[in-house]
Length: 226
Image 1 (cartoon, helix red, strand yellow):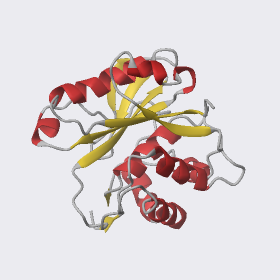
Image 2 (image 1 turned 90 degrees about the vertical axis):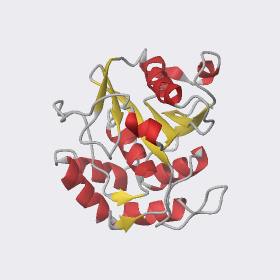
Image 3 (image 1 turned 30 degrees about the vertical axis):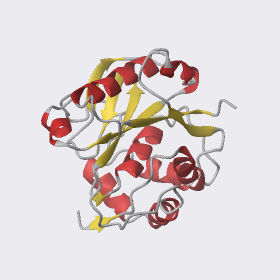
Image 4 (image 1 turned 90 degrees about the horizontal axis):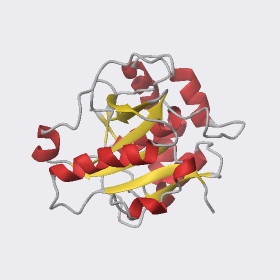
């Protein structure tokens, strides 16, 4: 990966600034997921959640025991993009979260993100990635938002030891979207009604591979509950 971005902080304010500046209407927000236990997930506004983004620590344990196998995209409604930009996994997760829910998430009239999704939806995963590299607006928005977190923004070339993935439901199937893989990972049947509980089960599988680690965090993309 010759191009590197400043990594995004797993902070709803940062992620919301990113999507708002790219033209997602302000009634759609990322909110914290406070835990993966049954009690904590009661606080997730389930009826309107369309994606859960998980941040997990990269390690030999995480990479050595995959939660599932990736496969070529067979459903034309599934939007999948390869990650070819270093430290861009946060942006990739956001793009996958939004692009696989354009029938639900709403956009401003001149949304640059919606234009990008429409322009790239029928392209191959690598061709999508090429257009992302050349998208000045998304590049600039990411650069600005990556410097607004609560911690000092690292150098773009810094090694990052955590990774974002997005979980979405498309046409009754739960998918894990990870731009490092060759395709989406299908985790079985799901629905709008069961999506949150289904997605949390996948998150728990990641936690169970490294139960002593406390560095797992997640956010949910939903219609603003407030």
